[in-house]
Image (cartoon, rainbow, N blue to C red; front, side):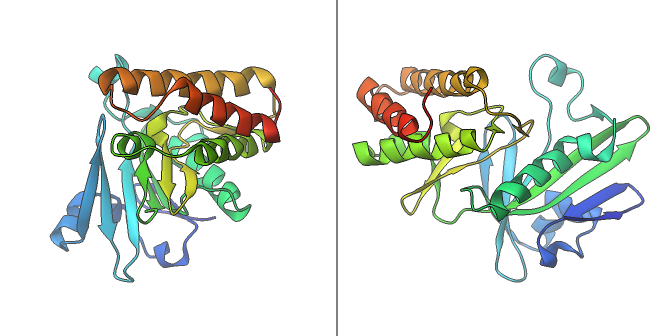
Length: 239
């Protein structure tokens, strides 16, 4: 990762072609003026897909606050050091995992803008081609038992590495070309493996599947699917 200082704050990048990015390039407005916005994903807030001059597709995401705090403070965080900012921390963990061959999106760049004691931030990652999150996928078709088993193995490999995902849910798992990816490592950490937080991660994921199925009863998920996932997990990392 390389870092440069700007008038507004700092830009870090992992992808060489991102070395020329300016603070303005982390605003969707710039990409819209170039007619380079090729898609979007709407959750609590919008994430933008943009096409670069080199025909890469990047995902641009701003860091927004959620919950009650977000009603009064949309995107400002207390600055306690560059490495501790949400964007730089997420870019760093993605770079580590990507270089080690884990199934995560390729990290591109991050931007931190300072304002007194506070900051706001943005991150850019590479778009995983032809990927769908598991909720979108399972709303249209099932995956077989072998794939559920493979998903369990994928999660276990992250856990064995000590990767704590702060929001492991069905929408933060992508399926593309028979491979599962984990996305959104905001507030994630690499920590000492421990059955406690690993089991909490799995419990959170199960609650996510059950919640999504409550909203969409036709979602292709069942207790048998979950059991296959757990068997795959245990084949790599006993809990």
